[in-house]
Length: 158
Image 1 (cartoon, helix red, strand yellow):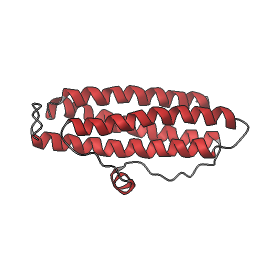
Image 2 (tube, helix red, strand yellow):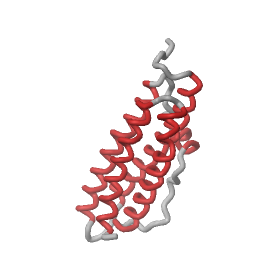
Image 3 (spheres, helix red, strand yellow):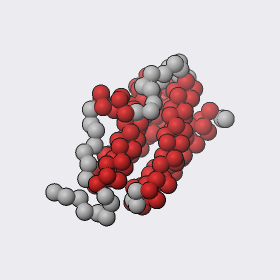
Image 4 (tube, one colour):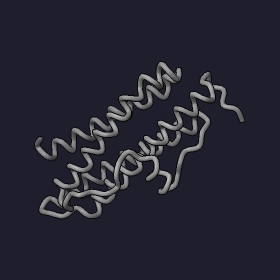
């Protein structure tokens, strides 16, 4: 069935490519939060175990919403680990120790990277592709990532 939402197929394809990369980033970050939740060590283990759980739950909702946005513009969302690793701007590896500071530094860097990626695509979504819906959608994601990054930063006392 044709998706007739006032955006050309070519523009919807371009939007889907950007959103697919964003979905991959979100999924990798979600997985890294799960890793932090499972493997954090130290005197603050219990607090950070709960903290990381809250963050990965938020990211789980974001992952789902990005995939659904891709579907709503008439394209299929990538859904395999290999496709996510090919599309992501992030790395799944961390060079940080398994303590809260190590995980927080790594996760904070990823949130900030996603914020920059989203920010550089907002104008294209709104103006070049005539898709204010996707522009508004990713603007909302910036706010969520900024808040999550703030929580991580505040945990470091930076």
